[in-house]
Amino acid sequence: MNNSKSLQRLFTVPFGIWAALFIILPLFFVLWHGLTDEAGVFTLANLQVVLQWEYLKALGLSAELALISTVICLVMAYPLCLILQQLRRMKGIMIFLLFLLPLWMNSLLTTMAWQTILEKNGILNMFLRFCGLPDMTIINTPLAIVIGMVYNFLPYMVLPLYVAISRIDHSVIEAAWDLGANRWQTFRHVMLPLSMPGIVSGCTMVFIPALTTFVISALLGGNKILLVGNIIEQEFTAAYDWQLGSALSMVLMVFIILNILLEAFTDTEDQRKKVKA
Image 1 (tube, rainbow, N blue to C red):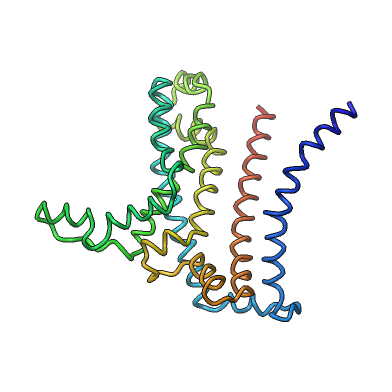
Image 2: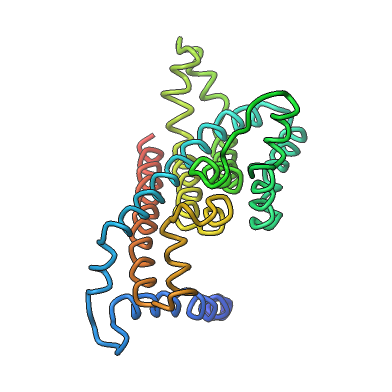
């Protein structure tokens, strides 16, 4: 038994080193720069600067667009996962893999492809002109950013939802039908509660990267629409103000921690319900 525990501890050493170098150490430097001035003296002035209107406006817009993208991904992914769950296994897996293809490609390339589609003389407006329709101005607008977010992050919603829905025992659904429940009642009282862990996990996996992204907003927003991710990137790379960039990053970490706590709370409630059942 002792040898087994020693072997397990030995296997955790590489991950411990990796976590220390690439998780704990970077977080320490973010906290250090966010809570100190250029002389290394402790201060809350950086966090007070974050409370200025221009930064709060960027943070609010980032949260708004991230929330819209998350809701759209959920609305698109849930019916898709229901359809995939009813298809034959091989056919469903093939369609499921098609939706995961964007994960296998560089997100920068896919975003640049959307830039080519949505720009003033892009593929979309060329098609509209061919059909005799007026041009659409989508590039450099919040709509373009939402389109890029939905395309890039939709697989992150599909993956946990498909797993959660696939684990639902079909006999439970049949029992609801036998008890007189219609399709809406079955969905509301059976499917939706049982798939809630997948919904929360998918929303977390979409909302967090959508909130922190800067590449999508830079390419599809044309740097005319500044999200908090763009401001952080500029503070580190252009202004070289690591203190302010770190303070903004700390604010984003609060959102991330709240999402993680929400997901953990949902999983705990789901486990309690299973134990009671």
